[in-house]
Image 1 (cartoon, rainbow, N blue to C red):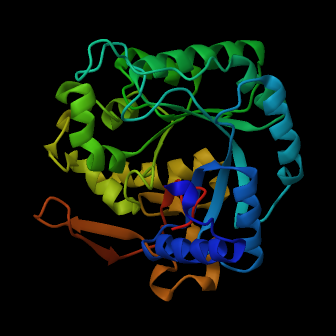
Image 2: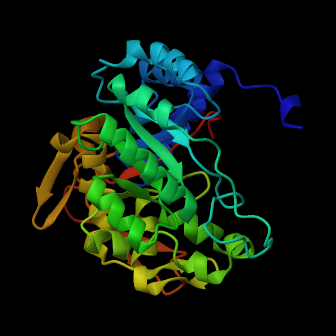
Length: 355
């Protein structure tokens, strides 16, 4: 039925972006890292920026999903070339997005699915040459890897790319999700210097469905923040909106409690409030390569989103650190207290269809 619905015109999409970015800013989000943007989508974002419709900064990953040859990737990179030197603090291209496996229903696992012992998810492609084409043109790469087999395979790929391209800048190759990364693969990622992004709201909102596919033991192991931090990993956090709900403080609460829609899952992977805040702020700024937008406040460090957004943010958001006190109702209500200068960074935004 979707193909029967008229596509929104550019003006409607800009209005959608205006509303969405206001919603992000209202929760204290200073920057959105959108991981699935086509060149056509980026043209709309540029028009929205020109119209003054963005209330949060946007860093995009141009989607290479579905591309299967180095020639196709080179064609995409040719299109991206004109965006390379964009210094607009509101909108810029971070790099290129690949996807190695599926998500809830098709993540590539080492062991068969709980609901189908003949199925272990799927790997979409072997992207060595595709990733290499991107890094040789000076762009960064973020690759979706959710299941443990996908995590292992991606690290194999990244290791080969690093061997063939010595001297790549730190943070060039990023793992998106690393959902079922086991201790061995976490140690490999750290040794290789591969940053990882994790999304606790994704686990919170989908735990019941994921248990059908993977069973409770594997679901409890998803997004092992404690293990990543203890190894000294370069790890940052976001929401994976629209799959997980946006709002960085919801994610902070989930990381400290491991609460999901069906109860606490994997409490041994919980981290402290200060650690969770750091993953969403200073670590996220480092991932973006924007440490210059980081400011220290006592023992807290975070992206100075308010400084970049300036007077366009509501007064309550300017120079505000959002602290929280979860209610007794399993985090369904989160209360905020304004105390000092910090704004979080969110991962992913409106995708190709504004909301």
